[in-house]
Image (cartoon, rainbow, N blue to C red):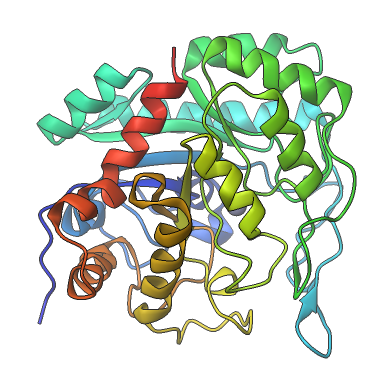
Length: 357
Ligand SMILES: [Zn+2]
């Protein structure tokens, strides 16, 4: 039976722009044409009732300097370790960022008012009401930004409204967390002096800061400095799946105290208690995670992150058209319409309202 869902779903993180940018990922697919490659395009988003989300601009390693290596995972007795990725150069990051951002603006222009890059809460809520697909520009790693923060000012004017200080590699602002299981996220030092300035400047401008991919010290540095709600767009509970990418109970408590949000990551490696990259992962595991997060953080501070187009997700979900199956499973486990609307979009809108100027 096909699951039907009428609640709009806003998602905290996706890598669709990367899939459209890299031919080896997206095979040149178009955002407007239904495809079976990747997880999101507009026709599938409509079918899954995805109303929009935070669109990551992730700069892959420079192919001229570091050929893409896929097999960096080192198996250990109880899980895996991945060496921390090398940093990338700012000029290269800037060029790739411009190209991916330009592509999003082209999609907006060619969409005949079906897609809008939103910069204000008014725009976001109007689009939700009118059923216009929304995209919020996010950088997954601040490599394109110079330590003097000139690029931050310019990108803010262009529409940047969400910023992950690091991906899992070091840059001028902080040290990313290397992937590993089972392992604590406490893997090294936190923000640099420039990183602390970046937090202050983002607060001033009203750019949401994303704590996913920071190591634990970086997390606490932002928690101590930032005046905005704390946000992890795509991370899960370390107590249930002890990867470096997930949040300890103490971190979850800090996010709750700030009235922030955790977006459930659908990546099976961050959901499963064995950390395996195995798409044969039942939806119940996702429900179990949501239950844990809701118990720890309250129903006000949990949303969906997904990591669509960026990770292996449970095959029962498959792609964005599978969202209604998760909503249904949550409904069956006792969440009413009010709770489901909070998880599906209202909590994201609340946090963005508190953060954006
Ligand atoms: Zn990520």
